[in-house]
Length: 426
Image 1 (cartoon, one colour):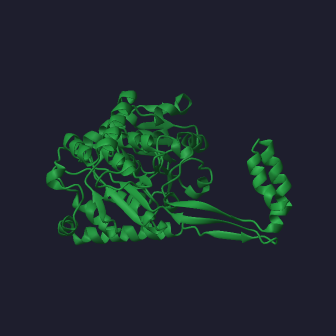
Image 2: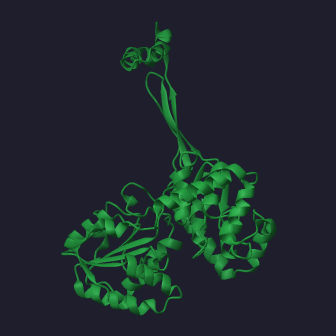
Image 3: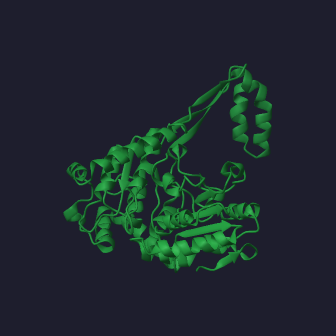
């Protein structure tokens, strides 16, 4: 049975910080890949894809052809297509509520102030491959971009050993209207999106999670392009009272542990017997998982059972951790919702396990990790638009405000600024 940690001895940093090895070496490796793609374009993409993915793009092709998308539909079931369409529609309906309108305000003196909302023109979405492929990530990145009005959405994803992409991923992309798809992954894919190559036109923003190489690449190209966030391994924190089911809690913890060896699954409760029973349930359920090795490594390395004095203290700890996914498995979950300060997404009650949000309910599953929910938000429609200020002063307004504008400009030593006002009013 896993050791139960005492609330008073918890070091929050140990719960949120993950070790990837030699960070400086990783940063250098990524910088080298970015430079190579920036310099050599498609040639570098081909060499790096052969090196890291074992795929010859000269044979498989860099860009996914329509015939490959058509074939993908023959390789998946009608039930899968129906589920993708239902999930897409749910995600779209949720994100439609986030749309903002441009606005203008007219003053009595005739001046007009406002803000225009404009979609980004071209966005790149990264869909992970490797240890698992995620058709759901296609929906969560593409749909809000579509709702925002983005004209060009380009998708990149690491190729399979056969040189193609998972049929389920291609179908999900097609159902979202994404037709420009490239068989590239890792830092080299981020570089192609950020700098452009002979075949891949550069984008305005890159969204979507990936491995440490993808995350570091996004970090290094930020400023050349915008990014959504620096996503790390998946996380779940559950705050439960004595009425929760150990069997259900164990299943929820493992739903995140199976993602990655560095994923973290944490249960906090004032009920010690619940923690003990859940620990036994986790061991029992681990043996049933196809990804048992991955989930066990995560649970043993980054899983935690924490005994809190009460739910109040438990909630304080949750806000310090600022988890990606937070489940409130208590008798009156809505009574506690107002106390949540830091979390990527909140799941209320026993009938709302985290996978409901991962796949189907509608809210986005691209969420801040590693404690960054203190300042980052979930990916949404706002991520795919920009705001442009609009100013139209009347003569009356300029004459009224001229002296104060000139005073502020001259206090900053910017005489030409002041004179741009002065020539109009004197």
